[in-house]
Amino acid sequence: MPTQSFSAQITFVPVADLAASAQFYETVLLLRLEVDQGNVRIYRVAAGGYLGLCQSDSPLGADERLILTLVTDDVDDWHQRLVTQGVSVDGTPRLNERYQIYHFFARDPDSYRLEIQRFLHPFPAHAPTLSLGRLLFFPRRWSWGCIRRSVRRSQRLVSSC
Image 1 (cartoon, helix red, strand yellow):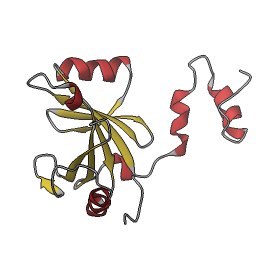
Image 2 (cartoon, rainbow, N blue to C red; image 1 turned 90 degrees about the vertical axis):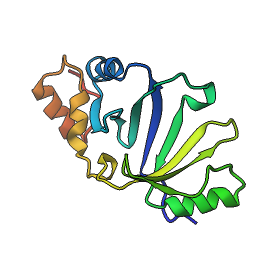
Image 3 (cartoon, rainbow, N blue to C red; image 1 turned 90 degrees about the horizontal axis):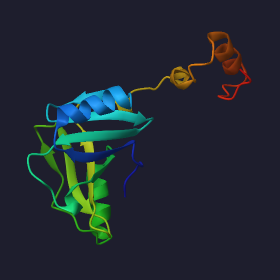
Image 4 (cartoon, rainbow, N blue to C red; image 1 turned 30 degrees about the vertical axis):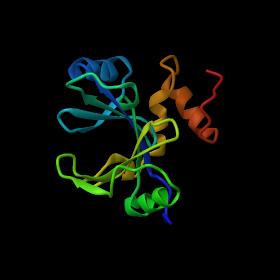
């Protein structure tokens, strides 16, 4: 039985032009690049939630276009649990040296790919987060004085400014 739940979630999607997609997500949506693995780029969307863009060299079938990745230190325990529950898996957990992960794939009832993995290198989801990071998302029309007053009001994000 796994001893912990998942620490992060990554949705991986294949893209035809990684450079164009990266520019869109970085400059239009203002997502922060967390991991650059060459042909894979992982962006922070929210605390514990990530988007992974993967360069695709060929068209993929509909059931191959999405990978829901769940990050945990208990990969082997999750594998055992899924197998015990009758879930279709692609084999035993294994090391992927290129991406420095330990993982396996499974299928949900609708045949979507699930990846259960552990990063073998530092990953941002395991780093402590700064709670005041929320200040980055205050509307531009607010002044610093308004922000300070809002923070003093028990960290509420609603203000009369």
